[in-house]
Amino acid sequence: ILNVEQSPQSLHVQEGDSTNFTCSFPSSNFYALHWYRWETAKSPEALFVMTLNGDEKKKGRISATLNTKEGYSYLYIKGSQPEDSATYLCASARAGSYQLTFGKGTKLSVIP
Amino acid sequence: ETGVTQTPRHLVMGMTNKKSLKCEQHLGHNAMYWYKQSAKKPLELMFVYSLEERVENNSVPSRFSPECPNSSHLFLHLHTLQPEDSALYLCASSQATPAANYGYTFGSGTRLTVV
Image (cartoon, rainbow over all chains, first blue to last red; front, side):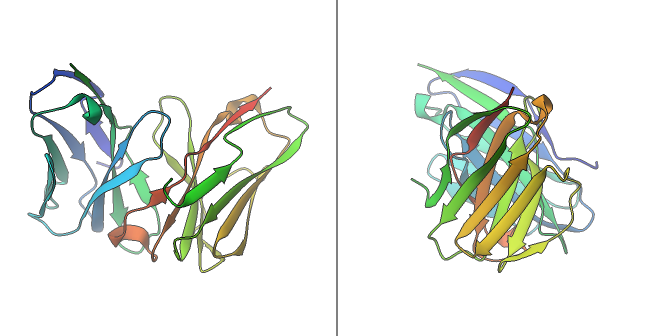
């Protein structure tokens, strides 16, 4: 994998449902994986930065896991709420580079 | 407010105009970035400044010219742009470089339309 790929591209869930998205990234020269939440008309907001294989991080109802050997990360949202509606971006950083390479994002819509 | 302020929020310019985008951060961060988001594309890094020095060479047309006069301010000077340069331009800052272990703090962006 040369680019950062996210799936699905968009997702509609009912309020109260739990959901998850996938981020695939190049595993060679991996340094860190970032997750951001981007609400419409606002700035992208950092959720997690993960560096170690097997890392798990949690922030309220949102959690993320990291597998650096196979090059993927999952973002989980438990009991989705309308305020979770946003585009979720992941980005990877490679060793020795200043650059974060972003995926296109997963757009989540939570239906009340 | 995130602590990273971008002005203007919206800009419409003709292809022969010269304009500048401004970004300001008061977070004490050492690195600042310009990213571009075009429709249906991921965020693309344009320029990185670390401690006021430009680092990394991304292929960006010379009609985009960055300037970082100090660690709190970053400019993007625009001249003779093309309609395909219409996009959202985001500024970001981070505590240290490389930015890998530190999340970026983003501004709200400038929505640029080239006519």
